[in-house]
Length: 273
Image (tube, rainbow, N blue to C red; front, side, top):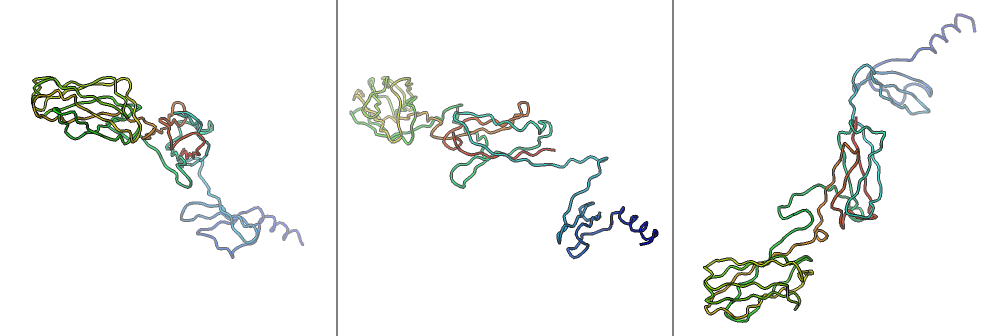
């Protein structure tokens, strides 16, 4: 090989072939490198064996606000709340979105969010149970099963007219009397309301029977509509809050219960620039 040929071959080895458009599998040989302008921007192509590999080329002088994604997983710990840190190598200021998945059961994964409920008071739900009208002039009882576990908080009555004499209503749960009775006083007007609040001997279980009996004190034939308020514990109706705290750079889970609980898997996707 003469000197001129060697110089020509050396000159060619120092150059990378350029072009435009996508490259086909039949082009080139293993070890070839090409730079091409494609419809998606500049790309670097390198062939190894019979396959071309592609890499995106970026202009370092221009702003590249590409959104990247990082995912990780873990196991929930015991308790009613949990803090899950975001990896420190991801800057909190670069986080543009976070998704949190909790393993409900088997292959079912759920995304949890705060759900407003007007009966939610922070840790409990209050629901009312309305009984049939009670005849205040006879010693009859009204029976009402409780559909959930909770705490008997209040009983109210609304009468159809003046009972003519004081009438006492006696609530019981599974045969055990609550701590206070309710008295419908003589002279109560039509639709007049009387209320009693309970603070002890008032726990109820799902399916328990609440009995409201009259002491037969009314002299007039009037009826009373009885409404009972039962506070349902949060453990029997799950509500979760899952949010990202940028200041602490972590996911905070509050209101954990039977669906987000100790030993259950979670997965996180963090979107950042």
